[in-house]
Length: 275
Image (cartoon, rainbow, N blue to C red):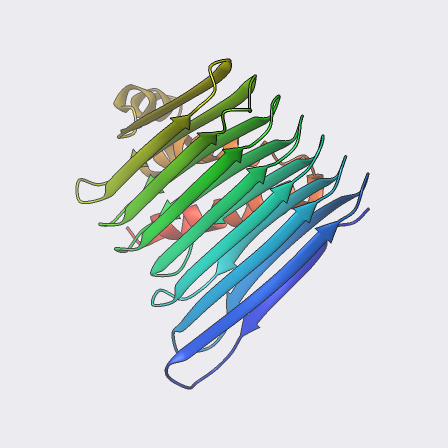
């Protein structure tokens, strides 16, 4: 009933730190688990962390996977999730991409039997010339399957965010419902957001869509908040919090949602303090 929390904590003073990890998770029929992955570097030297998660869901299973990190400004992080979903099972993945110089999450989720579903939600806060990327491939391999992807990015100080999402629909995957959306707020002129949505469809009775938007904070909204007593920095922070909270509000677990929201607010506040 309680979430399983997996900690990766590093503290090293040596150079050339390269860590590989493989986690295999098998969830049986009619079972449910919430998993929180936390990666923390307490050391003074940068690390390269490479993680491979292999997750399989049997019939009527539910897996909710959450990930967040507290890594250094020179760290490199790569995470790959390979997921196989069977009949009437649900896989949810929430990603808070908020630290490390280079941070990449890659997901390959195969919906292999009827009525299986996948939900990918991501919140990216990138600054100080960081590059953060989420890459996904959702495979609809049987009929009546559903996928939903929503990624939001906040970029500042010459940073970069990338979302590359692909929906693949097999010829026998009729009545597929696939959706993906990416949005970004750029807080300075030097930051960059790249979005590459892809649809590869071989069935004719499907409903698939994608969308992408990016831009600055709305000046009228900032002005409105300032007329209500907030200064400009507080107004911007409130708007950014509201922008990302739409993603964190998808988390059903109260304890995990409060934990992630607190980390988001702290990260954003620290980012603004450095302005």
